[in-house]
Image 1: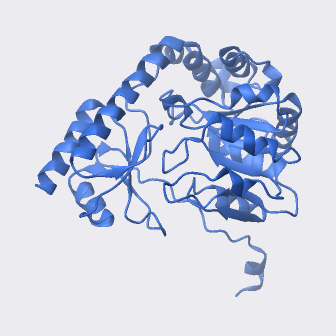
Image 2: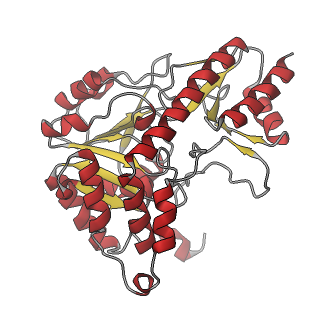
Length: 351
């Protein structure tokens, strides 16, 4: 090894889902929303003046922060925004997980968690999901340096009840507990009502899924003013201008269109439930996903081979070659037409 190489920080990076370059594929591998953003986003983009692009954006992104606070009935000082929830979560790891004790998160979960822990040199321990891929709340009752988990969990789609989340909070009042709610809008109740009782709770959400804006990169955290202030201090020490002017304007327009949000969310939920029924008829098994994806397996189909066969047919799903889940595929819920094409392929293959 060359001498200068000894001082390079080495981590195993997160591997995102494939972004195919060819057109006319059915893309069900990265949990994007199949519907366009709100028409108000298009209108805001067309109305955007060029002069704000010449200047630095508002470092506090106050317009967007105020709109998010208004949507959830919170105070602006309870909202933190960043470049996608990945940016927000990375800031959370950097800000709140500085104990010598290990942080806790599930063994099958969002695979960026261990990457950030390694990058920031945070000790961690993974708590195994049970045989139904559910979080076992009792595993989080012991001493730790912080807790984080998605709800619904990714990639399994299993939802933890609000009562179970509160139980975890009751047993962890001396550390920060982060609930990553990237998929909460597709089923189940948010942990937001618990903010009034637990000042150590932080809820993280995103515009990438239910608001059809994955390409705009907008994420946010909701919590006590003290937690948000600590996050902001770290952000301003790292990069004051994380949110660009376009993202602030378009994100504000998106969250103000509640009717469109409810309409597209309902479409995806209806398509998911219909797809569940047809997938069961084809012999697939899966949990009761409350996200915008299904995590499926089939007793007579090898998951990796099925993944490749679908890809060759122009249908992209997600395969994880990892222990316990290497016979499962994660399938994003697309439009009705996209799901019908997927189901037709599977029916032909199985028959």
